[in-house]
Image 1 (cartoon, rainbow, N blue to C red):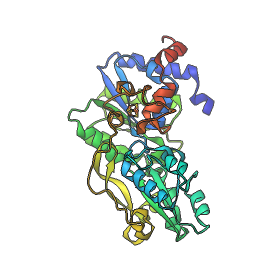
Image 2: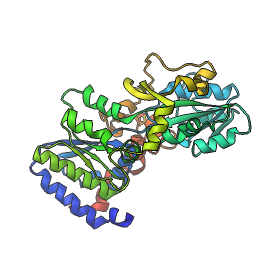
Image 3: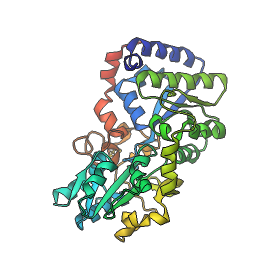
Image 4: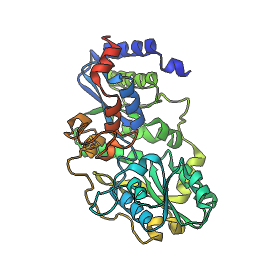
Length: 375
Ligand code: SF4
């Protein structure tokens, strides 16, 4: 199955169909929402299989890139005050506001002696916290990771000495924000995130077609998946249609995962939430329900949520524009100069789902063009 979905000949056949079809079309921009799709597109050189009038634009689907500096600063403060902080590998490296005198990341806090541990997930974190030490889990992610993080709260298996910094964000509201922020948006098609949709169901993306008249494809992550999704979007544009297409039906149902959705709904409320460098987006974040507020680390330790927007972009970094599809990493003067995978300056260079890191690792156009050759 996997071999077929990565097959070079099949990929080239679909790419030829895309090229044929695009001859009838004007300039088309398609946004791939998800960082993992950006990885597939860049790693496999799919951008270079596109005809000149079809452009693929990376979108906001990197949870680490959009996590406000406030949460990093807060977890660093907790760590420096003796609370053990547990988190994923990329949020461990994520930089906060880089204020003078305080560690810029959890990684730096650990170097200065704080108790910070990288874990694979919440279950690991719970196991570690069973030793009784005050511990906080820094939860960064979209709908995909939220159920696993919230599950011990749902089942009542979270130790009393443990709390959470919940920085979870929801994907449909930021897609709506992208489409509405720019009147006459040039985006003519959207590739929706497959992993998120395994939880939410494909139905969650129907609004893109219904409210904005834009074709939307929920896609798997192999090259053939992505090419089929692009072909379907172009077919719909060619026919003047706009509807939801579930290319990833082997993993995504229409309604989603009922138990996972129940866990999210029983433990959290949907709230207006800040996105790094962007601002508050209506109903785009999760906050623990009032009856679970004792497990909210920001409340427990008197730090407080972000209530007012303060731009947390780092000087010179264009990560927010990259996230919104308004700039490419190569438009940033710091790309591969002051900001590299080894020494990331901005958040889009930290995570494997960050567009800048993906382009830095796999985006050498000449190299890929050489591999693919002319169609
Ligand atoms: S290359 Fe670095 S500094 Fe530039 S936008 Fe990307 S993350 Fe920000």
